[in-house]
Image (cartoon, helix red, strand yellow):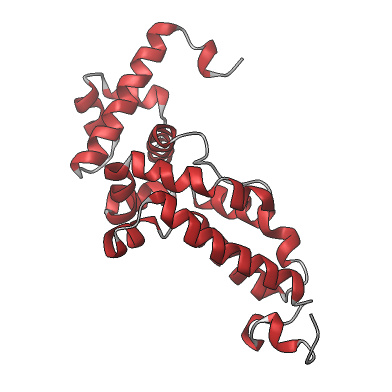
Amino acid sequence: MTDDAMIPPRKQAVRQRIVDALLSLLRDGEDINHDRVAERAGVGRRTVYRYFPDREMLMQSVWTGVTSLAGPDVAFPTTEADLLATMPGIYEGFDKIADYATLIRSTPQGRAVRLSQRDRRIESYTAAAADAVAALPPEDRILATAILQVLHTTPWLEMRDNWNLTGTQTARACGWAMRVLLQDLRERAGKALDEGPASESRQPGQK
């Protein structure tokens, strides 16, 4: 049984009104704070604090509300396999919530929402990429993990705006790029990233 399922229906309804108000403020480009949320939700300020004691929890709730609309694949990966397996669902999910997905990536409020997940994001992608980057020098592990994270979720808006690509097409392009990078990481045997691709270290005729 989930925590939400244990909340009495009346309290669930109040909580949902607050979450709806949070999403409404994001959509309208307004600052997200307890006072504005209370006004938009039609509840007391103390009620908002009861459910979300600080601004960080407000931002986390916006994140959860937006990603839940996009679908179950819009979640942080836990394994290397997740990086590829969930990509189509993520980018196609962004298409389903294009307005919100754009706001999350292009407004100050959206940036604050994304930053509320920074620690979880780093922890998750570090774990998912751990085996692939294990042989790299320490700094390069961070660089390689960061670019894998970027490919997993970030190019959607750029490729939609500039190339008119759908989420399905973006997933194909980013999936190809990620497979190439993962293959390179498997073959480079600890070779530093600024030394070029792993293939450059092969002997002539070596596969």
